[in-house]
Amino acid sequence: MGVGRAPEPEPEIRAFPLLTDALNALARTGRIPRRARPAVEAAAWSAVHGLSLPLLDGPLRRLPEQRRADVVESTLAMVVSGARAD
Image (cartoon, rainbow, N blue to C red; front, side):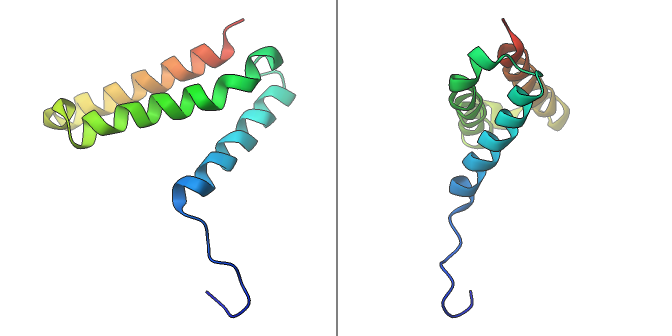
């Protein structure tokens, strides 16, 4: 950090605006419906963070690596399909 510069925000604080910007861009290009746009980041953020706890500290931590990857992919696919739903 240089003199006179504000400290960098925490990673999760930086991540949410990035998610918001990406979703805004998807809505502008019609890849997700504009009427669904206001709640999409909360749903996406909740799904990903809701999955992280069982993967890191809960019962899913015992899954084999490939099965864990499959669970993550399935969760992300659900988020994407929900965002695209009319």
